[in-house]
Image 1: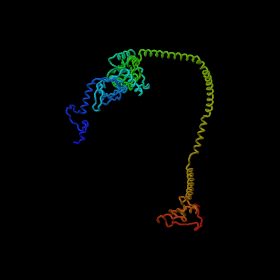
Image 2 (image 1 turned 90 degrees about the vertical axis):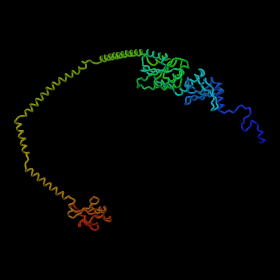
Image 3 (image 1 turned 90 degrees about the horizontal axis):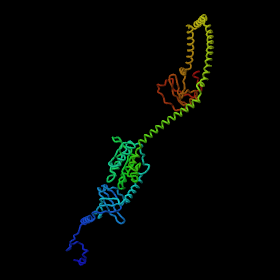
Image 4 (image 1 turned 30 degrees about the vertical axis):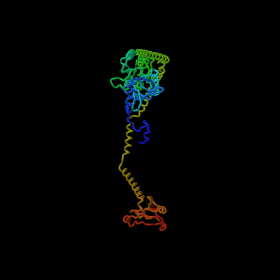
Length: 497
């Protein structure tokens, strides 16, 4: 053994060794954690803590995780799903609460925490702080804006009421509606306080809003959310965010009548109209039927008076106009005078016309004597005899017409341009036009000679020769002949001379 090994202190040994009289065997980490867990749970099996919520979060499983803190310490906490469902409020960071539960440890992180079984707000001040915080949040989202408010219907056919079916509120509402103006009422029974009340109220409001009226149950024209008076804890269900959002999202005009006149909840801010009491809500919902009937009667009387007054005024105006209008005699007297004058003139005119007509008749009748008629007929017969057609006149006329036609035919034949070609002449054409001079032929370069039995193409001067026609297309007497002014100075004769 090395001398250095003996120099090591017992506390610096390399290997652990059992020592005589040692009755404390080593513990595992799990064993120690279990012992600590049992000790803490036995010692602190029931505690109540007051602190401010911090780091609050709700897991998908429904469990709540948070931390409770004061000025100098922080303690983690957890609340299982069963206890979380029984909470009367929604926990939020910054809210001071009193939590009841037991302490335990979490070996996985070497931490101790409180398992909360019940959690309550630490006094009315904490409750009001939570209320103001939620109010500011919802107001920031515009849920309380005035422009979101819907007008209430003047005379709703059906009214939906969300309240407890066993309380005095529903009886007060029904009684007040029956006194003012009977109408159909649909009651959606809900809890108005305690566990699950907020969820039931929100579900009822959304249920009324989702109705389309196509079924046997009509869709309400107005919804009243009502509850009697109570403490702030009793009315807290109507401060829950789920209720406020359901009221704000309702498509039907809604009246909030929660508590007495001095009680105010967030539901009142989100509703289209706030009523100080449930009875006042019924008064807002419908008008007084007797007042409506009285108003209709008064309007009928006023309408009758207006009609009679209008008729009386029209009668007065008519009488005034009638006094200013002329009488029928005054209107018809000029016309009657004109009628008398026209009648007298008509009689005189008819008499004069009769005299003139009789004179014309006598004059015409004197000319209609038989002798004159026979003389007129005789002269007409003589003229008819002179107009009779005789054959010699017709033959003479036809002979004159034939001589004239023969003269014209001979003159027309002399004008035929192809007639000189029969005597051996040729007609010179270039580009469809007649060539009348040497200059025109030289300018054209190529010409076509027309003979009595065909045509021949010819080139003038240095123009390139045209494509030759087949020999059988040109007769022996019509071969192309090139002539120039230098070769033959004999002037060309006129073909039509």
